[in-house]
Image (cartoon, rainbow, N blue to C red; front, side, top):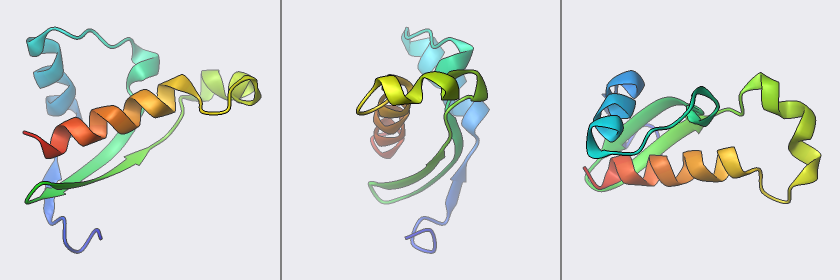
Length: 78
Protein backbone atom coordinates (compact mmCIF):
# COMPACT_ATOMS: atom_id res chain seq x y z
CA UNK A 1 0.00 0.00 0.00
CA UNK A 2 2.86 2.39 0.71
CA UNK A 3 3.96 2.09 -2.92
CA UNK A 4 0.49 3.33 -3.95
CA UNK A 5 0.65 6.26 -1.53
CA UNK A 6 3.64 8.04 -2.98
CA UNK A 7 2.91 11.53 -1.59
CA UNK A 8 4.56 12.06 1.79
CA UNK A 9 2.69 14.42 4.09
CA UNK A 10 4.68 16.52 6.53
CA UNK A 11 3.16 15.45 9.85
CA UNK A 12 3.99 18.70 11.68
CA UNK A 13 2.37 20.75 8.92
CA UNK A 14 -0.65 18.44 9.05
CA UNK A 15 -1.04 19.04 12.80
CA UNK A 16 -0.64 22.79 12.19
CA UNK A 17 -3.45 22.67 9.61
CA UNK A 18 -5.65 20.83 12.12
CA UNK A 19 -4.90 23.49 14.75
CA UNK A 20 -5.86 26.20 12.28
CA UNK A 21 -9.27 24.52 11.92
CA UNK A 22 -9.87 24.59 15.67
CA UNK A 23 -8.93 21.28 17.31
CA UNK A 24 -6.13 21.57 19.85
CA UNK A 25 -4.34 18.27 20.34
CA UNK A 26 -2.04 17.97 23.32
CA UNK A 27 1.38 16.44 22.85
CA UNK A 28 0.07 13.00 23.81
CA UNK A 29 -2.37 13.18 20.91
CA UNK A 30 0.40 13.64 18.35
CA UNK A 31 0.71 9.92 17.71
CA UNK A 32 1.11 10.10 13.92
CA UNK A 33 4.74 9.52 13.02
CA UNK A 34 4.48 9.43 9.22
CA UNK A 35 1.76 9.93 6.61
CA UNK A 36 1.51 9.02 2.95
CA UNK A 37 -1.38 9.79 0.59
CA UNK A 38 -2.69 9.17 -2.92
CA UNK A 39 -6.15 9.71 -4.45
CA UNK A 40 -8.36 9.42 -1.35
CA UNK A 41 -6.11 6.79 0.19
CA UNK A 42 -3.91 7.38 3.18
CA UNK A 43 -1.41 5.33 5.11
CA UNK A 44 -0.22 6.35 8.53
CA UNK A 45 2.47 5.14 10.87
CA UNK A 46 1.18 5.76 14.39
CA UNK A 47 2.88 5.18 17.72
CA UNK A 48 1.59 5.55 21.27
CA UNK A 49 3.66 8.13 23.17
CA UNK A 50 5.94 6.33 25.60
CA UNK A 51 4.47 8.05 28.67
CA UNK A 52 1.12 6.36 27.92
CA UNK A 53 2.37 2.81 27.40
CA UNK A 54 2.09 1.92 31.09
CA UNK A 55 -1.69 2.30 30.97
CA UNK A 56 -2.33 0.53 27.65
CA UNK A 57 -3.87 -2.54 29.26
CA UNK A 58 -6.65 -0.43 30.81
CA UNK A 59 -8.32 -0.15 27.40
CA UNK A 60 -9.56 -2.48 24.67
CA UNK A 61 -8.54 0.25 22.21
CA UNK A 62 -6.25 2.95 23.58
CA UNK A 63 -8.03 6.31 22.99
CA UNK A 64 -4.91 8.11 21.74
CA UNK A 65 -4.31 5.41 19.12
CA UNK A 66 -7.95 5.49 18.05
CA UNK A 67 -7.77 9.27 17.75
CA UNK A 68 -4.57 8.98 15.68
CA UNK A 69 -6.39 6.61 13.31
CA UNK A 70 -9.18 9.15 12.89
CA UNK A 71 -6.64 11.92 12.34
CA UNK A 72 -5.04 9.74 9.65
CA UNK A 73 -8.39 9.30 7.90
CA UNK A 74 -8.75 13.09 7.91
CA UNK A 75 -5.57 13.34 5.83
CA UNK A 76 -7.27 11.38 3.04
CA UNK A 77 -10.05 13.95 2.90
CA UNK A 78 -7.79 16.96 2.35
